[in-house]
Length: 323
Image 1: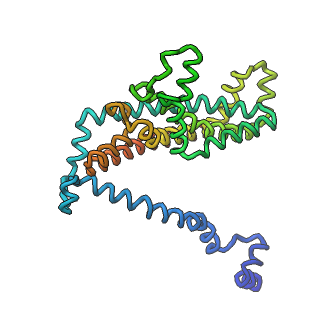
Image 2: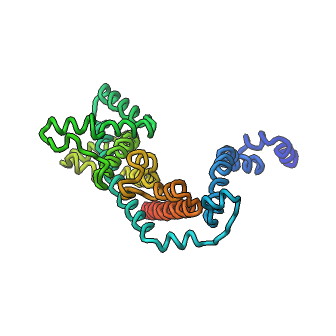
């Protein structure tokens, strides 16, 4: 017996072949492998984003304007930038506008994206491939290029949209300026953002529907369930984690949208279409109140962190309900 014990101790492979547990050292290495794999990406993220966040945070506690830049002064003012913004009615108006704008866009994106995704699941192979190709091309178009195209479409003179509306009988729209009012500007921006976001939701929803067992739909059909009933009783419950994750990602993407809004009309007219990212840029770079702009950007991140915490709470609650 002692000889067998010594042999197993000397030869770990023989020990494993006889049903013994693997060496603890190898188990610890295997447990640490995932962390070693993500370490390079984590280091790059910390270097590129962490240092920027630290510098931005330090800047938010300074009074940094044109005078300080010229004279190379560093004036620490504590939380004055934050208290000024939190006590400003303009900041809260922009925050409320950002929340409403985000909610309206996300509702449209999820509704239309789900419809397109369900359409993909029902189409034949050729039509599905054609529609998927169109979605991927729309999704892959750079934001600046897509915004430029929409500026041409909604141009006051020679714009395709105004031309078509004029031909359809709305002659007052022949030379309509879509960026002259708050609602019309937001309409153009919303159409652009929804158009850019639908491919992500649609393709992901279609991919998720392929994981649903077909037997569930067959059983629902035998029970007399129509398309809407099948969606509410089979598709939506099965894909609820997908809807939560996708909605959360779209909330973040829309909330931080900057290029579309700024390129269309720079937050105008009269700063009535500014959201928090545009507001931070205009205050920081436009008005050269760099400390104020940094404080606004930090407050924007805090709002996004609050949304993230709410999302994680929903996910944990869902997991608890499933258990």
